[in-house]
Structures are given as structure tokens and as C-alpha cells.
Length: 313
Image 1 (tube, rainbow, N blue to C red):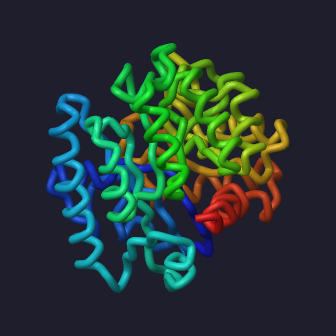
Image 2: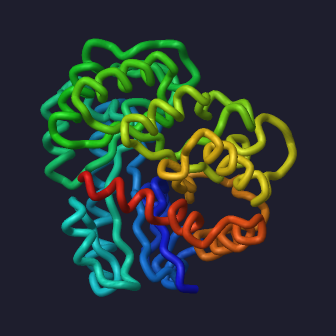
């Protein structure tokens, strides 16, 4: 398969550490042998903050997860690379997997904003301030809480450092504040793994206005492959057709340069029925082609839109 992919979100690093699984080959959604068929493969790998841990415990866990992930990349350095910038990515050879780091739930700062510098120095380039509920920074998607003073300080510092703010798990009020701060800083912001609320109502999905504000900022949106995001609440198993419905809807909002993929591999057990890992994601490209998507548009959604965005790092 001569296909290129940039995926904006996975939880593989956490799962690898928690379940003691290697990067080379495993039974997770992502492994080097599962993505070897891609001519170009770039993955934004998020380190999730386990909700059962305190903020301070989660910060310590972040470093254990990250160090384990880095050791796995080093053990496979002929076929895996950790990138900190677009320049790093440009040097990755065809067939090798390139990874960028993200933090999912910045509560791990535990009130210490200087830790943001430590995360940046470790290679983190994408950061979401929330995951669920309220934390010291503000409200998650299931709340109506705004950013706290600390949250605004962290968001401003992240923008200054050149980190990309991710609003996929943010409340509507946090979204609005991050959009305004990003506009003032003349920086894009993104939603790494969210779908269209107009297609499937879900608090994690984006309204039309939110999608267009991300697009207007120069940001991108990764289509999630999580069943409830694709179909809404209910018992029906999602299918590839549901993924395409969300893609087509966002394209109708002038999103041809905005729509990407943010699969949430290893962060869900409810993938579309035809997709069981990164190895079978080509079936989505095949189905898009069957729905008369041009090769150029498929390439844009799978790779080029995110690639153009990464040039800004």
C-alpha cells in the first residue's frame, strides 16, 4: 500500500507502559509492524493522565510512561524516530515511523507552571488542558466551566513556547477562551480527535461554529474513530460509512484543508467494525475512493493537511 498517514491522536504510549507491550509488535492498535505498510507514517502520541491518580502522581507517571516510550523508540531506532520539529520530520526516511509527543490533561502540572518548560524540553508539542470534569485549569467537555486563572496562565505560556493547544476535551467555555487567546497570539489551535456534532450529537463533538473557528485559525481537526463520537449514544456499532459521513459534513463547511484523522487508537474499544488497528485503516481510504473522493482529497485528509500544519512547528 503506497499510502501516507498522519494520525493526530493515540494512547499507545500509556497502554504500552501499563500492559508492558513492546513497540515493535503487539496486540494493540498500533505497533511498528502494523504501520510498516505506510510509505509515510506520522503519529501524535499522547500521554494520558490516569484519572485515578492525583495530579502529582500523574506527573510522576508521565515521566515513567515517556521514558518507557523513548526506550522503545531507541530500541527500534532504524524504524522509529521521535520528532520535536518539522525539520526533524523532514529527515525521517520513508518507511520509518515518526512520533510527536502530546499531553492529554495538563493537570499534571499540579499548579507549577514552570513544569510546562520541562514538558516542552522533553519534546511535548501538543497539549490539552482537560480530559473530563473540572481540574485546576478549567472545565472538560462534560462541564460548563471556564478556564481558571491558572488555566489562562498555562494556555498563554504554551502559546509563547510554541505548543499547540488541543480543545478536543474542553468545555464550550474553555474552547471559546482558547480560541480568543489563540487569535490574539496569532497562533492556530486544533481538535485532535473530535467529530461533527451535527451528524452525531455528543459532548465531545464540535459544533459547526467551533469547527469553522478552528479552521479560521489555521488549525486542523482529526476525525475520531470512537463509536459514540461517530454514532452518538446507542447500541449500534459504528461503521466506516459513519466516518465518511463526518468527513463529508466537515468538507461541506469548507473544510478541505482542515479535516484530518485523529483515530484515538488504543484509547477506545469501539472502533468501526471494519477497522481493528492501524493496519486496516486502508479500508477507510478504499471506501472513500468508492464514494468518489479524489485521490488528492483522500491524500489531503490522510496526510497532507496535517503535514502542512506541522510545517508551522
